[in-house]
Image (cartoon, rainbow, N blue to C red; front, side, top):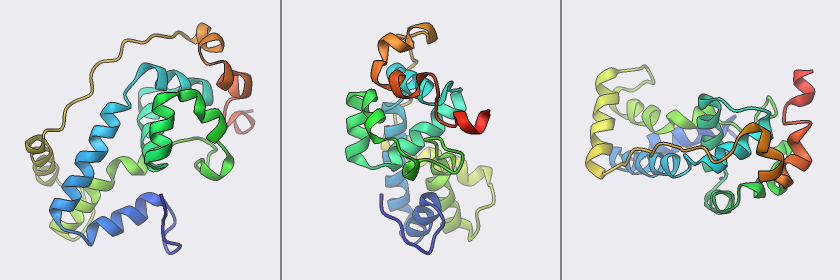
Length: 178
């Protein structure tokens, strides 16, 4: 995803772009984003993230999926078809400042833009949040299904051989952790 040089990060840039649009465009963005988040709530993808980062909590998996969506449609599709494609794609240019494939701020872009349009600032507002959720519900956002994990940590080397070869012994951020 391309961003303007005047903004420090992708989420900041996207919030500014969306805030200039109307509420319907923001709702459309958030609808698409939530559906991609739900579509990417998959066991194999979580396993790949686990190998890459040497572990992956619920929150870290959300941030990872936000990052993946932010990489664009082509990359998202390739990784969803084969999570081991991440081994080819990952480099320091597409990781966060901590050296991880995560983008926590991307998760709130739609709500932040919606709130800014409605109130003129980014302050949390329960009513605005509920209003956005209601609009998304009317559009038909489907919740993610539960995951049945088809991997265990001990099987990671066998299930994700390409990722394990590169990241198994020294996951992303390994040098910063030691």
